[in-house]
Image (tube, rainbow, N blue to C red; front, side, top):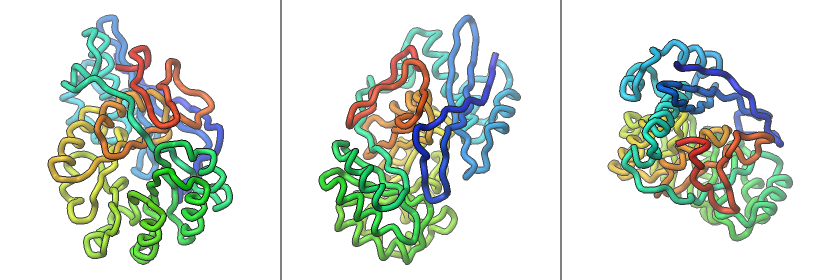
Length: 320
């Protein structure tokens, strides 16, 4: 039996990027029950990609009861709905076999992953305060994407003078803004900039200087999308809600490395159930941004554990 339901998880604080703010995460939870075993997975439908929770629930409920992971890759397009089912089927196989997903996938035993903690877009003063509160982290990911970002990134660096920084413009800049900001980002020690230009309007990245690594997020989806990024991007941000699950995320990670692209593993604002499979993809990644549940007022039972710098592999009681 395959079931799907929408669930809402409130955030402690509003989360703001250049496209707007949110105060809760609406996710889709898929459960697959067969032979007395139950597996589950989570997807976070994203309006930016034309997804809704309602459509995702309906698509999952329309699947054949005995669908396999291999058949799923053809039956559903990449996205949050397929992610929820794919991860549920991996979890089901682990429960039925008594073997963890990492073994089933032929991977090494997962270790804690150093991650970036995200600073929401805000006024320079509030971003400096947030940076100061998180100056003990390994990496801070700074949300930008407006025409007036220079005071924000200066403020973050003033608040956290020694922490490693990456920035995410969420498609919010023009080529002129990026070209103007890039030398200052380098001066401030920024390691990488994520999706500075809109998807579909990013060909200019192949024509202008990229003095620091540029990461594709909205422009990168499944493995098939990656060859078209060569010459424009240096890094790809792989999210299971974009690849359509763990199966394709592992394939996309291998394809990125074959193409000579660096890898970042990211997430949507979602619960520990979404983080659990992403941790497997993040093993050995160049950057990881898996702090989706950190600011949730409520998470799943048996949540993943964070310390000041890392996310730790999930307990089998949660997933996998």
